[in-house]
Amino acid sequence: MNETNDAFDKKAKAMFDESVDGLDAATLSKLNRSRHQALAQLQRRRQTWSRWMPATGVAAAVLVAVILLQSPMAVNEIPGLTTPTDMEILLGEDSIEMLEELEFYSWIDSADLDNDVG
Amino acid sequence: MDVSTAVFAVSYSGTPITGTRALQKERQLNQFLAEVERRALRIAEIGVRNRADALDLVQDAMIKLVHNYSERGQEEWAPLFYRILQNGVRDWHRRQAVRNRVMVWFGRKGSDYNDYDAVAAAPDPIGRTPDEELSNSEAMQHLEAAVHDLPRRQREAFMLRTFEGLDVAGTAVAMGCSQGSVKTHYSRAVHSLREQLEEHRPEGYGPGEGSR
Image 1: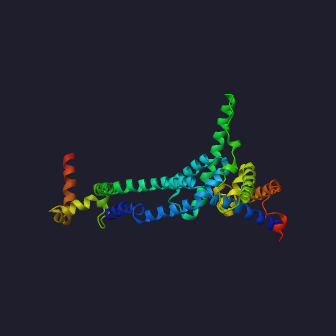
Image 2 (image 1 turned 60 degrees about the horizontal axis):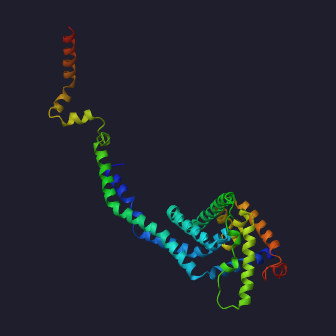
Image 3 (image 1 turned 180 degrees about the vertical axis):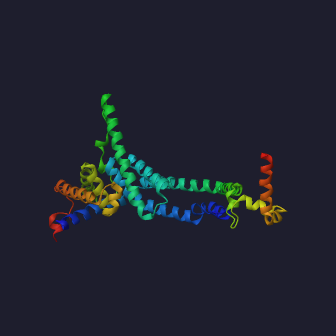
């Protein structure tokens, strides 16, 4: 039964292929035109993209760079620096002296508070 | 992600779409479409019994494949293309049914697709006697008519498996069903066609031939 079906299948395929091979020139020409129309949209898409790609790429890169530089997180991600306060202390001219006498300044601060209350 | 990585990522994302890769993809698509277009036309023509409409359907399928699936792997194109084409044929029949209902309501004859003359539309092969040509044309006419009259799913399974040569997995993708369903539809289609074409069978596919 399978052999019979295979023979039928082969014969049907051969008849179909014959009809495909015999397509007239006008029809083949229309098919050719259809194919090129379909592929033309691929070319259009590529041309459009390549025309805008440099500008789009630069704009996107600038945007990303500005966002990252403007963000406070960019500073926080520098290793060893955990808070903006650390940065301020290091950048201050007299900060080292203040650090050495931190206890003294703390005492003055609390003494001022006591005086204000009194 | 730091700034330099971000800039690189933005710049790199456009690279694959342009350049040699895109041209290569276009060449592959062109080759694929050139290979399938003639068989696709005949398959669509058997489905709708009208060459002009079949040409439109093939063109639509080509455009949709290129537009939606050109980035897919090459091995996926054939099942996807035939799926689009079969959907197009299905939609064509729906539109035709609506049009016929409207025409009947206005008291006019519906479509003329039942008057389709497959012999007149058949190709004109070279190098054969008129008798041979007539015989082959008639055999193909009977085969076409019988395939056209099959239930839709059986017709799709038979044409995709036999005429286009897709395997069971590819046919399942093209038909949007399981491989088991493809086997069932295909088997029923072959059985039905063999019965219908018994009287007009072309030489070579009868039981005697198969048992040799």
